[in-house]
Image (cartoon, rainbow, N blue to C red; front, side, top):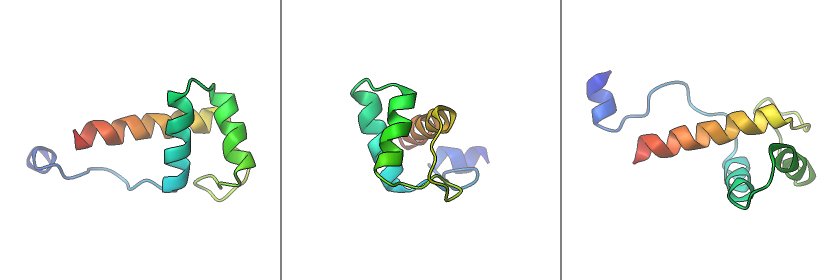
Amino acid sequence: MQTAKRNGTRLGRPGRQSEEARVLSAQLDADGYSLREIAAALQVAGIPTATGKTTWHHSSVAALLKSNRDRDRQTD
């Protein structure tokens, strides 16, 4: 596993969130929106959650943003 990490292989389960959700949440987070505001924006945009539901929660947004940061850190 250490060799794979050194070679840049992404470890772990693949993400289930859409790229659209990742991009929009990252943009809104960078603009200073709160987790609840981002959740509302994702709902209004009609972007489904990872489980296919239409209701976003602030905790789901927090997990999405954390996975975005982790993903970015792995590619650096």
